[in-house]
Amino acid sequence: MSIKQLSETLINQIAAGEVIERPASAAKELIENAIDAGATRVEIATAGGGKGLLRVTDNGSGMNAADLEMAVRRHCTSKISDALTDIRTLGFRGEALPSIGSVAKLTITSRPAAAPEAAEIKISGGKTAPVRPAAANPGTIVEVRDLFFATPARLKFLKSERAEAAAITEVVKRMAIAFPKVRFILSGSDRSTLEFAATGDDHLARMAQVLGKEFKDNAIALDAEREGVRLTGFTGVPTFNRGNSAHQYAFVNGRPVQDKLILSAIRGAYAETIPHGRYAVAVLALGLDPDLVDVNVHPAKSDVRFRDPGLIRGLIVGAIREALAREGDRASTTGASSMMRAFRPGVQPFYRPQPSAPWSSERSPYRPFAVNGGPEGFSEAGQANFTDIVAPTARAETAVAEILVEEPATATAEPSRFPLGAARAQVHENYIVAQTEDGLVIVDQHAAHERLVFEALRKSLHARKLPSQVLLIPEIVDFPEEDCDRLMAHAAEFADLGLAIERFGPGAIAVRETPAMLGEVDAAGLVRQLADEIAEWDTASGLAAKLDYIAATMACHGSVRSGRRLRPEEMNALLRQMEATPGSGQCNHGRPTYIELKLADIERLFGRS
Image (cartoon, rainbow, N blue to C red):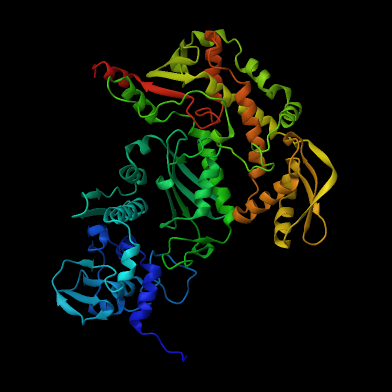
């Protein structure tokens, strides 16, 4: 069979399969073009979920007739010259318009501000009509009708009109967060109108428009820099979380991305504060030299590749954890809202606490990898060993006595002196009611003390090199050479945690010591999973998480139990310790340890405001 050159139309249709996967993909490309053109107002109209109609109108710089004719040709662009190492625009490949025109009916009407009239060009199924004069305001109107009519097989893979319309809405939301100076209007016969007014330099105000006003009240600012990479944005307090990751937004040099490295870093930063199956709300913006990131990984430009992924992950995890330690202990405002709803007759609360049950690994946010096939490799022997190696002042039973000390002065102190106020009562031998300057706080004594004990245990755990147990016969584990190199690069870090490894000839690792607190452990399975983790994320935090898991288990069993009656001085001592301990706003399982109710909220319950 002889080789032949494909037609231009077929080439564009092949490219469209990568660039234009669904109506939302077309909307993304057209909105990016509008923003690159300097638009401050972008209007998007849809019908039939974008399959019947997709129209994007902007007030950008516009194009004259000559530029318009070039714009619909493949790989024609004004955004780059010859290099892909310094990309500072959203679009740069020059594929979107010809790809859309090859599978749909495309009309582009554009007019520069100084031009006396507009120009218009039409493409239908890859066939281009001549440019002709038209009437239009300055800017550009791109109208796409009957998407995929030229490739009807693609229509079978699209979802319902409602689902496709929702995908376009998500694209607009991401663009709106990235560009707060631009006004976005989304309308159409298949939706209610959605408008995001420009907020200028107030990024948090734009985030509140998209994520809801509650995010503004529960957000913590981020601003960190490391080796020329800057991270800014906002992240929610741990108790302000959601059931999926749809409320996590990431941007790289202003470009909305969906990068698994960034999402993994967010998950890792909140690993000890959010329950399993819940997700933080976060908006992260990374700024770095374009030469340090490759945005040309995929034609859709939603994936990126960093030159130093370890640096990026470390920056995100470190910045979020520092922010949580600084401000993350405050209660989520949604807790007070739920309480208000619960107090109103006939209205069901938004959150119903589940019946108390023994703590289990299924409910733990730690859940490190299992190495014995059992419940995360935890054993009674491991628990006993751990008790022996931690400092006496950090043991659970000692921590109970240390925290619940008598402090008579705090029992009668003015509530305005303390963020969590002064204890006034204990309800059902489990909940402490404290009065603050402008409201009241209700504390779950078991959950709060569990967190305090865990932090004490963990501090002792990481204060020195952990004891290890020497294997009678070293475990020899075969690995590819690249995995051996990765493991040995972290050997010193493992040694501090009680895991001693060394090279054993080509393609093998010898495990000579394992952490004593783990008890009997499958050493081969442990290092194999560490090797997989390093290969995937360029980090070896899994072993530390496993040790923290055991500390969390002991903290749960060693803390103040529900049903124990506390004296006023003990309650106040617990409140003061919470104020001084990072992460005390949530327990080891991620549940809130206290809920704050403002005086104004209480007055509204009684109709006094």
